[in-house]
Image 1: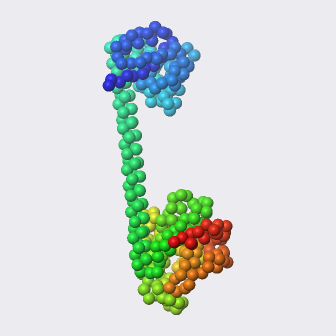
Image 2 (image 1 turned 135 degrees about the horizontal axis):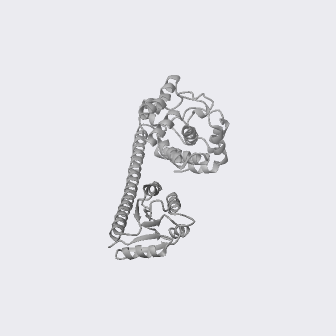
Image 3 (image 1 turned 135 degrees about the vertical axis):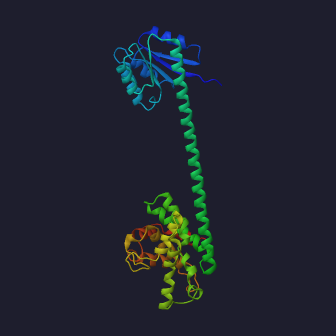
Length: 349
């Protein structure tokens, strides 16, 4: 299919416009015209032009000023401008090229020259437009490919987390239901927080199952011991946080890094009496402060080998009594103000 080009001819003498149109009429061009600069700036907004033939010497607004305004407007700055001039002096030509014109043609017109220069610049402009569109298409494909790659990468991280939690379930009394409830409670608390992005909320949700992954390194007889730990056994049990950190800390993947933070810090306490680092207040990462409440909520409301289940009301009192001591006071208030939503999660089967 033959391309049809739109050309705007601007000249205050209508006979010059007629001459140019007559010379170029055998080609596949659609012509528009303007008799002064202001009219040209109005016409150029009515359609997409492929070339502008612009007279320099016009009253009120000369061609230089028109060109300057065309090049200052993002909508028209790429349209090639060829100056039409009766003055072939170097200064006039240089001034026009500095303003962004691609060429100049002297009047009176020579048919072959006019046809050749117009044809050349239309072909160049079309080639640039095709290249620009191809680059845009290529960029879109690259972005889509990167999105697909990142999506696959994130899915791989989620699968790794799932496999690791499956391993944890096989070596302790942690159940899939416990892990799911902790994730749901963590997501609810992260959402209520109000300052976390959607990505951060999802990070908490998908990474929280790793909170006790370090327990796979704890001897079975300690991990599943009924009754209270001895002082030595408790020290061994505390190592699950640092062991998890040793295992996860080298990953550069976002979800695994979030899992590392949670596994390492979720036993820290707001007042600094927690383990393993004795971090205080906001020195504890927000992810870990969130999961700390979610984990205690679910652990105490469900039976374990070493304890019976507490009532939901008892656990609520336990958590709220430790506001500003064990738990982040702001997060504890959010928990208090949304008790029924957390009750629904605790009762999930």
